[in-house]
Image (cartoon, rainbow over all chains, first blue to last red; front, top):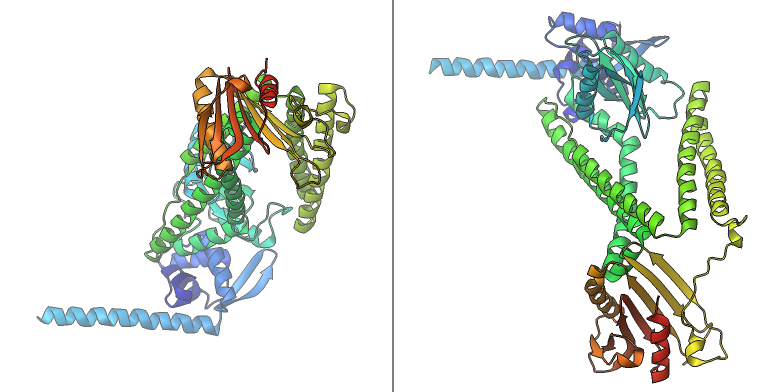
Length: 107
Length: 450
């Protein structure tokens, strides 16, 4: 599957997991991601559906409530770990960037 | 002014970008798709407008679903909330329209989209293509080998030609579609790793070419059937064709009715298949019987005397024998050639009892004559495994204009002859050396077709 089974996360995966620290329904996720990113990141409705299904399958999120066709989701411990790993990776990337730029500026 | 129209659309199931472009153009012209089935796309008239179109796939869907499942409905709800209105579904495909100027695309993650398309294609489309390819491969091998070994028979038999062309087309369609799909998937996966979407390829021009080829073969067959074929067969074919149309309409009607009533997917699939089998039996059987009745007045096809007159029997040449000779005949006729093949073999005997096979072609188009003589010689050599050559011999004893005999590489004269007179060609394979009297009788019976 994509990203070698979540070795890394795409932006859309990242923000979807991030906003599920709080229980949310599908449409609320779309709104929240736009809000969090100032509209920079937009998740398509099909992608949202597929990602939710994929993350549930992988145990990264779980379904908390089903009201008719409305389902709510929450991140799991495994999902939090994945998100944390991705943050560490991004931080390392940024650190590398800063360090290299500093070294090059000194030259 | 009509409010709906139907079109046959030549598109690949997974070619969502091509379908989106096409439906956007149709919306500009004032047509919006509202229903798709295996044969036609139904459009409803709308005000010509700029609509956004998105074609997506739901792998778990089936064409027998009474209505979208809870899961599919959840996806449809998400799409509606983001401005995409569902127009119709077809198997795993879903067509959405949006009136918004810049709606968020339904798929924003290319890797996921490639994955979903592949899952949807695996459900029906790819399986169907592999089946078509296998069927086409068998048909093409048989067709090509017949063309090589029995070219004249193909020219004399429009039915064999049509079946062969169908096999070849199936093979090409299956092969080209599969190659196009897997090539796209490979490239799309690579592009997706860079976060890019790759447009699906269009095979429309190829599909049109295949359609033209098939229609041409069908037209050739139809023209031959009407002008040179057996009238009985023409009636039967006419009724079977009409029956086939009725069968499709009835089967699709049953499926739609069961969907509307809300019968479960499995039950709908089972009942539709059952209905199709029953309709096929009743309608096709009825069509054949009615066609036969109209053509001949016979109430039962078994009453028909499908007898082909045999111009020459073994007993004419060798007199009555202790054994009974089989008389297997087959004949074909086209606007180019008329063919009759007769095999007369002794029943249940493998001794020295004489036997013969002859094949007679009557060439209707003089320009083809030389070609046919060449092909007859080649076909006779193929039957002899290329052991020898066709040598010109005295044609007088046969009453022919030209005569050839197969002489093996070791110099043995085989009793395989090619006789030509007027527009008639006869290949003759005998198990004994014919006498002058027998030769004269052969020429008299087989070369005089008038």
